[in-house]
Length: 270
Image (cartoon, rainbow, N blue to C red; front, side, top):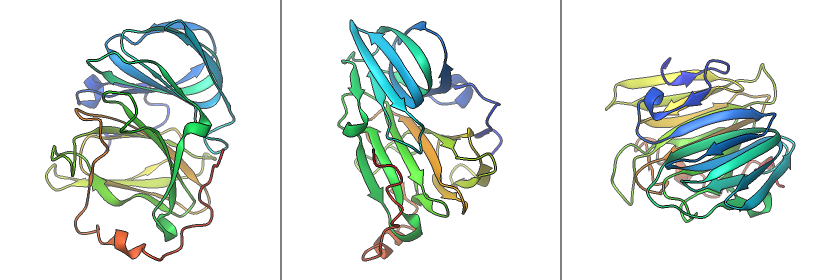
């Protein structure tokens, strides 16, 4: 998995050129000064991870934050359309996702109270989903979601994939998993497997690591002791999250009927 796992400190920016795919670009930046930028031919999603910042674009000014951290409060997300000059400044850590698109839309600031919180799964597969840029949002390709997994729990489960164009059941999506943990000793495991692509790997992931998911079934588990966070950025030809479960494990969904959800979830409420 050495080409798919990017340990913290070894990567700065994922691009189509270095990821080997068509659309998705992703980076995490620590802002400490004012900078002028341009989206060019790409739509851009800026997710505030911590701190606060100001973005000036299209004649408007957008305030993001404050956010104490990904385990403390819900996200601020700013969508910027293609062909948009913008200026950003503040003291903040931000995740920036982008992909090429055809149509120019309008900027959209999504505040924490506008985030759709979903509690998914049950038992030790209960997790929190912060739905941000999802199907129905006025974007062309980019998709962004946060997942908070309590210590000892599973998420992205049952294992699922999105590497075949079979709408409405499944679409092709490029995806990154960007992980955050509350302590350097905390760890989790990420599995990715595909008979068609000849891969089956399970890797330890820690705070600041990133995993590329170009294909295959994937699932995640947080080791006991520490809650885990990850941000998924995705892009494809269709603005859809349609995916298919591993058919050998899809039955697990029905086992959740009548099972209590983990009372720790949601981990973050406001």
